[in-house]
Length: 164
Image (cartoon, rainbow, N blue to C red; front, side, top):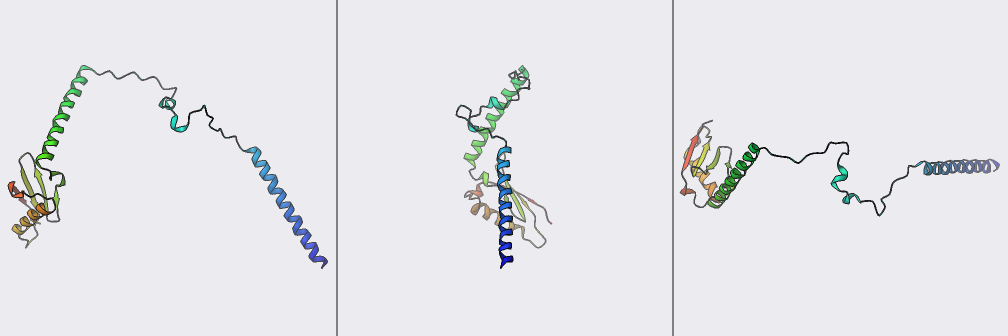
């Protein structure tokens, strides 16, 4: 019985030593932590930081861009080209509302629309034994059903056949 009491005292002693060491470490760590700067009310919040704060103070100041007469001419030419392209795009979307759904692709065909010629161009890749006329009919049917071109017969087709 005496040995059991002795063992319990040793365990309590060991437990007390471990708890004391842990407590000492916690106190030491709390004093060694670096202070964290907290945002005060007069400091800007992260979402309030102005772009000026991000500028490298050692960087040389940047002067406003001055364009040469040639650059100004090029800018004006580009503006006119952009305007023409924009108008052409609106014209194509109005005249051919299905144009954006093209090209039509399959393992044996590739079909696109040449808006300058108002012509469908069909590239067919028949294998030996394939009926080219059936392939053409399949393409036209898919243009009607998948691309929803109701007046597909209104436009001529240019077929280019490349046997495999």
